[in-house]
Structure formats: C-alpha cells, structure tokens
Amino acid sequence: MPIEFDDSRVSVGGVDDRRGGGLGGLGGGGLAIGGGAGVVGLVIYLLFSVLGGGGGSTGGGLGLPVDGSQVGSGSSGESSEQLQQRCNTEGALDKYTDCRLIKVYNVADTVWKQEFDRRGIPYNAPRLVFFTSATRTGCGQASASTGPFYCPADQRIYFDLGFLQQLQDQFGAQGQFAQAYILAHEYGHHLQTLLGTEPKVRAAQERNPSLANRYSVALELQADCYAGVWAKLADQSQENGIGLTADNVKEAQNAAAAVGDDRIQEETQGRVNPESFTHGTAEQRSSWFTKGYSSGNIDSCNTFANA
Picture 1 (cartoon, helix red, strand yellow):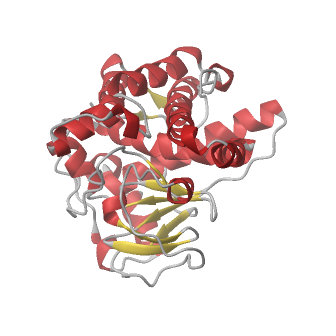
Picture 2 (cartoon, rainbow, N blue to C red):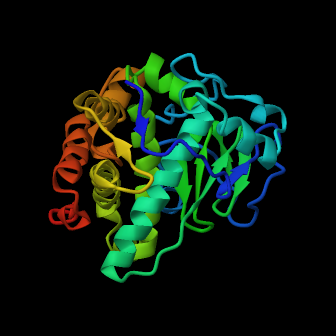
Picture 3 (cartoon, rainbow, N blue to C red):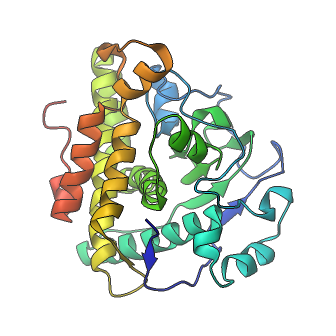
C-alpha cells in the first residue's frame, strides 16, 4: 500500500548521496571493519548496529529498487540540487524509492524533534547516506553486504537501496511501509545514541561479555519499538505527518518479522542457532514494533528488563 504523506514536499538537506562515488565519500576515520550483518564480535557489533541478524546475508547490493520504483539518476552522480528537484516533481514519492525514503527521514526528523522538545531533551538529527557497494564511515569501511545500518561515531544512517529488493524477493517483506520501518528502525538507533543507551549497553557488554548477545538483542528490539512509536506519532502528527492504514501497519510488522534472526538463519543457513541471535526472533521483532505503535510512547520500550 502507498504511504499517504500529509505534505509531499521533500528536503534533501540532511542527505549525503555517495552513489557512484566508490569509497570516496565523506566519513573516514576509525577502524577498518569488514561488512556482515548480525556479527557477534563485541566491538564490531557496537560499531555497526545493522538491521538484519544472523548469517551475514542481510544486505543486498542488487542495485534494484522495490515495487518497480526507480532509484533515479543519483546513482550516476546526481547533484543535491538535481536530487531536490527530482524528489519534488509530481508523483515522485510513489515513483522513486530514494525520494520516498528521504521523505520518511524528513517526517522522522520532525516527529522526533517535537517529541524530544516536549520532553526537554537535546536533539539533533542524524544524516542519511545513500551509497552503492562500499563506503567509508566514522565506524570504518562498510560494504553493501552489511545491510542498512547506523554508525554512532558519525551519527549517520547508511543505506544501499539494493537491500530493499532482497528484503522483498528473498524474505517476502513487501510494501512501502516495510521500507519506512527499516529506516525508522535505524533512526531508533540514533535515538539510543542521543539518550545515552548505546554507550551504557557497550559498558554492560564489556563488563559481561557472556551476555553481549543478549544486550545486543535488547538494543535491536528497542529500536524496533521506537520505530513503532514513530509510526504512531507520525500518524497523529498535524505537521508533515503520514496517514496510516491497517495494511501499512501490517507491512511493517511483516518486515520486522522477516528480519528476525530465526527467519534469516533458516533462509540462509537452513538451521537456527538461538545462542548466536543478535537482533531477536521474528515474533519478538514484530511484537516490539507493535507495542511501540500501540503505545506511541518511548517509555514503553524497555526491552532491557530481562537482559
């Protein structure tokens, strides 16, 4: 189902478009780390809060958008001005996947700024980075095989659009709001940085390495819950919001389940190893998104109670 945006205007001011730029883009320092989703290593996990769990095959790198949409000429070195112009043409939010994700990012920025202001908490937006194949980040070198991820060191969300095709084709998560959930989940990791949750989890993992995976799962499920809270707040927003249907919510729930550790391990390895879970099961991921959506309150997202 299409997403109904209250305001179709798109701002690309927070976007770094590195498509077609190889490893040259912004970013840079830090550890040189190989890609791979669901990695277990403590330091690697902390540096790459990736969306999908288990097996290192979440990322696509297929270079194809979902739903027959077009990625657009940005992959050939489109300028910011050209991207801004294209994303504000009539029908762009349905036609172009990148424009639609930028709009979701715009809405997330508006919603979370308002919510943090209401709570009296300092807020700054992350940046959204589109890349193909590989790029340098504040967390080191990353490849498309990592899948979408957030780097706390430079406070950027990294996205190779090819992942969306794999999410649909291999894991059956279809629909525009499935894509929105993915971006909202990564935005949730940014909230964890702003709220101080991420460094606390890092310290807890260092103190108790045997519980590192359990803390990792709690961190990921909280990001799923925050994505659900965002969906509710955006649906209720009177400014730059979205109008959700039951079908939209179902798309997000299906996407959350599709990237559960058990689903991905079964699909990619033919077996499930719960001890290696870093992101949570399909049921956990979907249920925590639903809990966030039902409550519309980040205080309901305490996934660490049993961690």
